[in-house]
Amino acid sequence: LWAQSRFDGKKFGICGKTIESLRRNVLSEILPWLEGLGACWTEKRSENLLTVRFLGRENRYYIFGGRDESSAGLIQGITFAGVLLDEVALMPRSFVDQACARCSVAGSRLWFNCNPEGPNHWFYKTWILEAEKRKCLRLHFTMEDNPSLTEDIRERYRRLYTGVFYRRYILGQWAQAEGRVYDFFGPEMVADVPRGQFEKWYVSCDYGTVNPTSMGLWGKKGESWYRVKEFYFNSREAQRQMTDEEYAGELKKLAGDRPVTAVIVDPSAASFIEVLRRKGWRVQKAVNDVLSGIRLTSDCLKDGRIVICQGCEDCIREMDEYVWDLSSETKDRVKKEHDHAMDDMRYFVSTVLGKRGKGFTACAVERRK
Image 1 (cartoon, helix red, strand yellow):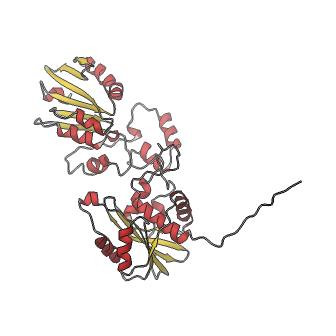
Image 2 (cartoon, helix red, strand yellow):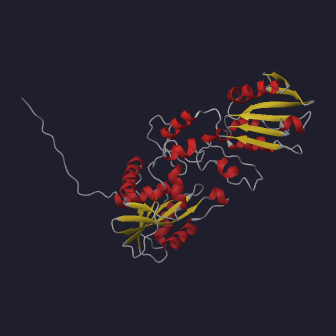
Image 3 (cartoon, one colour):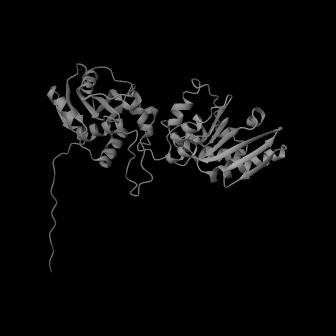
C-alpha cells in the first residue's frame, strides 16, 4: 500500500530466506488481500517478478532469496524505491547490506521483520539497538499481540516455556535460547565484588590477534574464587590490532598492585607467553581439554566455587551466547563464536581448580580353571 500510493513505474525488492518460503509465508497472504481491495497483479515465475496495478499506478516487485553469502551477487546492480526483508535475522549480513544499498530512489524506505535471535546477532546490534540513530521505527510484538491465538493457546504456551525460552518465544526478547552451554546461568548468579582482603590472585587469558583477547582477574576469598575484573579487546570492532607488548601493558593495568600468583595463558600463544616471561610474570600454560573443562566449570559455577562479579560485562554476555554446535554430528562440540571470555574462564578452572590429587592403581587378576 505504501509503495503503490507513493510511486509509479518503480522497482521494489521483496526478500526472504528462500523464494519458496517468501511465496508461502508472504505472497500467498498478501496477494488475495490486495485482490479484495481491487488490485490486479501478474507474476512471471521464470523472472521472479510480480507486477501490481493499483490506485492508478503500476510497479514491479522482484523476489529474492537470501540463503547464503553468495546471494548478495544476485541483487547487485538493480535500483529500488524500497525493499522488504522478511525474516531478516535468517539472512546473511552481506545480502541485507546489498539490498539496503540498492534503495537509491528519493523517498525510498527499508522494511524489516523478524523473530528474535541471540543477543549478539548482527541485526540486533546494528539495527535494533541503533534504531533511533538510524531513524527507524521499531515495533516490538509479544505473544499477546498475536490476534490468531485463543486465550487457551496463549496459556498453554505460557506454561510450556520457562527461563530464556520464555523471554524469547513469549516476550519477544533477543535472548539466546537454543543450545546454551551454561543454560543454568542467569543474572541472579552475578554478585558484587566482596569487600576485604583476598587470599590469592590469578589472571587467566585467552589470546587473539584477529580474534578478541580476553583476560580475567580472579581473587580467592573463603572457599570461592571471584572474577572481579576483566579486560576484553575485539580488534575487528576496534579496526586495529594490539601488539603483544600492548597486551602485556593491559595485563599489568588489570592486575594493578595485586600479588598475582601466575598468569594462565592459552597454550598456543607462544609469542605472548615469551613477552610475559621476559617481563617477570610467572606463566602457566592452560589445561585445554574443552569438554572436561566445561563440565568442571559448570560444577564450579553451580556450587559457588567460582563467582562472576558485576563489571565483567563481556563474560556475562558470552554466558548467554556460548552455545553447542547443534549441527555437529558428535553433538559434543561448541561453536567457536563468542567464546573468548568462556575460554579464559575455562583455562582458570581447569588449571587451578582441576588440579589432580594423589593417583591410584587398579589391578585385575586373571582367573584360570
